[in-house]
Structures are given as C-alpha cells and as structure tokens.
Length: 335
Image 1 (cartoon, rainbow, N blue to C red):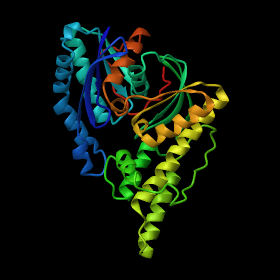
Image 2: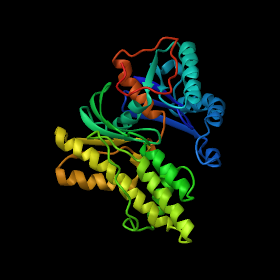
Image 3: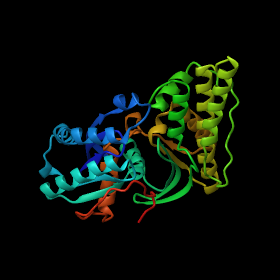
Image 4: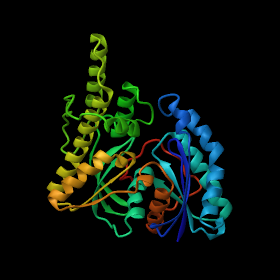
C-alpha cells in the first residue's frame, strides 16, 4: 500500500511516499530554517507563506522520486495536529484538495504519532508495545506505545520542551538557531562539569521540567557579564547539554525499570543529539534493554514519518471527511 505523506506543522514543507508503513520510496523537504534563523526562531507568518510557495512542488518531487503518479497511491496522509496553525492549515487544505482530485482516502495524522512512526522506517522489525521518549522543539513526552494507534502518556514536560530549552540557551549564548545542533557543536569543546546546573523538581514521577534549567543558564550569563567575567560558551553549552540529556535519560530509564519495559525508543528532533544517544546506549547496556534509535535524517520534521503513521491510521479505519480541520493543540492519545 502506497501512502503519500504531507507535513507542514512548523518550518519544514515536506512530502514523501512510503509503502506499507516501512519502506521509504521518497522523502522531500523544503525548509525555511535559514530565513527563520535571521529572527532567532520560527516566525509563524513567514513559515506559512513559505509552505504555500513550496507545497505543490515538494509533492510533485516526492511522486517523481518514487516513480509513481497520483493514480498509484492508496491514500493521502497529512499532519492535522498539533503545530503552528497557519502552517498546519496549508498542509491540510492542500491534502484535502489533492485527495479529492485524485479520489483517494484522506488520513489525518497526529504529529507526535508521526515522530514515533519514524522508528518503523529505521527498524522494520520493531513492533509495539514499547516505551518511547518523544522530544522536540515543542514537545517532551514519555509514552507507552500500546499499539500502532494506541498510546498512553506516562510523563511530560510541565513547562518548556527540551528542544525549546536548547533553542533558548543557544540564543542566550549567542550560538544561533536552531539551538540543538548549535549547542551540540559548541559542547564538543567544553567541560561538562565546568558549571553546576540544577535538576528542576517536578511532582509527576515521570514528568520533566526545563524552565528552571534554562533560567539558571541565563542567570549565570547575566551575572558573569555584570562582573566582567563572561562565561565560557563551550563549557556552558556542555554543562547544559549534560544536565538536559541526563534529565531525559533518567526519567525514561526510571519508567522502563518500574514498568518492566525492555524495548526503549527515542524520537523527535532531540533524538538526533549524540550525547543523549550515547547516554541511553550506556544505560540500556547496563539494564539489558533494547534501544531503538531513529535515523538522524528522520529525527526532525519530515513527511516520511507522516506517511508511515498514516498507513497504520488507515488500517485502523481513521479516515477523514472533507470537513477535516487543523488543530494547534491535541494530545497524542486523542480519540
């Protein structure tokens, strides 16, 4: 079964063709990240305009790269929630028109379910149930994947998402946008023990918090400037990255231990962070758990993950009507 996936929830306009949820035939991405970096982050209005300009072309390229036409497709899957609503609506409305014109079923896909589905493209043998940390610029969740379309939220951020914290710390340190890669690059030359940063306390056993950690970095930078003793950027980047990844890994492994989970996964943009990957690899080696990591190219927003998730949504009977609308917020366990 061939599924066309369409993704436009942030600043990537993407289209892809995936077969049976596991085999990637094409994956096209047009990003406005360079333009967004001029403003230190995503400007929703600019992102929406770039989606409008790019979406038709990326879909055409995805079909061409897969060597198929619209007639060969079995369904059209699109991110309908959550995300920047202007961008989401561009993708949803294009997908509705494309599905109608080609007489194909329209499948609505939750963005976080898409990130989890990226694992199926990397690991064709992986099947639920398993435990997954989904960490990105807008989300940080620990989720038990009960089945392909059934999810239980075990923990989440109570304030900033992990990726958002990376972006804000990068801005504070003058490292630019996007913050995740910028902090990781600077951290290669730093000392992770140079600055003692806090681990914010939370009530939920598997919840996480990053607002206090981000604020601690900002305070140290401001104090250093006032004293005429600026912080060492690389040392601070390393110290922050160490604490942030430690928080995520500790909560994920705690949940795995207490729930008896032996299949552990990570997904989302933060899953590309090398320090987090290495930390979890070491933890899983100690406990004997299996660790599944997505391909780096599938960690960020892309349409391949939407097409993969769309396959399983289609099999579950989740077909949209022509009144499908975009939603800015929606929990992953919606029904």
